[in-house]
Amino acid sequence: GFTFDVAEQKKLLRAASYGHVFCNEYPKDKFREMCQSIRVLNSIRDASVGIPLTYLQYQALTPQVLVSRLANSHHHLLACRVAQYNGIGIERVLHHWAKMKIFKGDGFQDQDLCDAIVAKLRTCHGSSVASVASYAFQRNRKKLAAMLLEFETRVSKQVPLLLEIGELQRAIDKAIESGDGDLVYYTLFYVKQRISLQEFLSIVNHRPQASSLFISYCKKTESDSLKTVLQSMGKHEDIAGTTFAEILNENNPLEANDDPNKFANLVSGLQRTADLYTFTKEHAFESKACLEYSKLLKTQRKLQDSAQGGHATQYMGLSVADSMSQCIMLGNTRALSQLKSDFKIHDRQFWYLKIRTLASAKDWNALQDFANEKKSPVGYMPFLNLAKKFGAPNEVLAHFVGKMSDPRVRAEKFAQIGYVNEAAEAAAMTKDQDLLTKIRGMYGTSVSSIVTSKILK
Image (cartoon, one colour):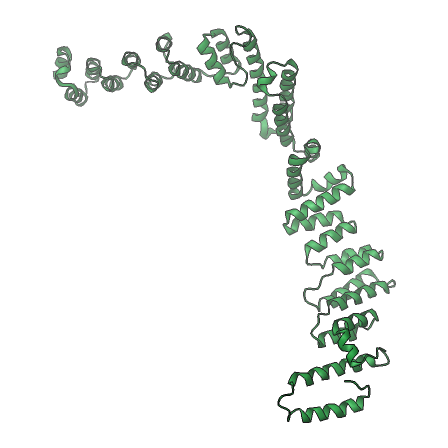
């Protein structure tokens, strides 16, 4: 390896090949490595290359550095062969070749250059096109750079370069296709900083995934621009929901009762929210609910002001049902009727509400008076069940049982609360011998003689 004479190298190698058979301790790989080194050295010592390295210089330089020098000297084919001969990857050599191809390829069409570069880079499995595309852009070959990036398989490298060369929409599309949320956010923020908000929104509006991510971001960090974003996207229901949340945060109903300005803002804000919901037929319920809530607040404000002392009774913050319950407890029949009329409460709902309110308050006299007012549209079972739930005495329960029209039900309910005679009389009206016998068996001699005679008949 220390001689430059090829003929002398051959003689020495033949001698070494013959002699190393007799040297058992001589490393066998050393002969092969020397042959490889001599072959590489002879190829670079050729006049067309002109790198007269000695063996020691080659050893100190390392094959990796030699490959880089060959590539920089534009001996790309030789650099690839030396790299492959030494088991070194050729990706860097191919990238250098591709860049020089672009550097010297001013007379070539972009498509021709792209095809040639891609065909060569595909021979190296897993080779990235990103660095070549970046170089093409630096050489003012934007179209070529964009064409090359179509063949980049790593989205994490492809998207930043698309952004760099100004292919903003393609970058967003590629980021979305990757399914990487962080990459999509990075792309959106990059684009947003470099174009106007209106241009940005016009791009995002046509991409549901991107718009959803951007809206989520605005809800958490940029609430001021959220409405503008939603308005441009035509998402009126989301604007309404955001407006509603802001109104309640800024104007708490309980606090608004003591501040006329806050109360006015709360009511007007609910009206605006209702108007926003009317843009879509699917949200008619939400629109009506906002109007009803606004009406409820106004009614509660009047009730609050008319209450004794101005603050004696709290209505603000209550639902319609709770407000009506409050009126029932206070005996404010006029306000109760007004609430029932304004919010179109059906008779059955009203009766259930009043029964529950009086029973929970254990106002048994009022509950019995209410049952006696007129025929109940809900029957008398709710009276009995709720009175029993809140611990009414048997006399009160018997009053409600006695108003039930079905004698069989009366008989069973009287029997449950221990009203034997009343149960027997009701059972006798059914002319059901089984029921009559059952009651007699339950109470025996405790049944009065009159009832007994009815049972025996």
